[in-house]
Image (cartoon, rainbow, N blue to C red; front, side):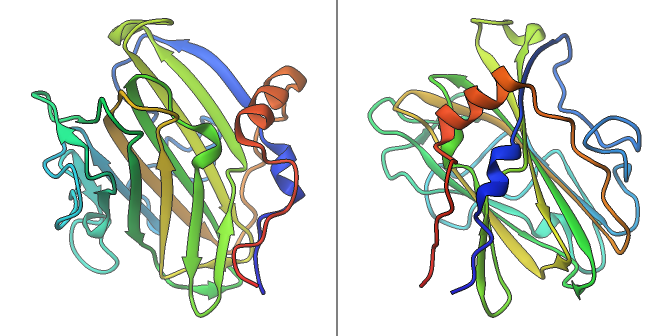
Length: 242
């Protein structure tokens, strides 16, 4: 058995802030947790979705906003978003929604496959409308011979003023996963709604891999940490495979 789900999850922090931007955070080499890279740098990958075209199964959804690299290997464009809920459908704006069931999703992405000796940071941004995301559902899995599953190391929630503000239509979520000492060839991220009537509006994934140390994540605030732990139940190690 090999799993990296552990008590390191208690280092999670949940910051709740307000934003006037309709866009996701773009890695810029300065803003935490993106101090180590800017979007489009070597050893980074990027893919983003705004309009989905497949609500359930099928070939999945390729990134429609952009991806990096667009040529070569691995491809940011190789990333796919799959809807796993048969009752889900597409809204007129290209969101994925179900009024009868909690929706469930899997993001699949390639990576460089550098193996041991590399540190990897994966940032996933998710915009939802309507009912909330299940914060405890987020997990990253990679399997280069032995399956490893990770919980987020950092979480931030933004009420998007440009799209309705606190109590309004849109909430942006930022989840960060750190893979210490390894760079997989591919990975998947699973997440789901807490109940029916959550609309998946937008999605982005950025990754960076380096032989150096990754910048430290922000220090948890006690109240925010308690909120995240209550929401996710990440207080003990769990094994996926015995």
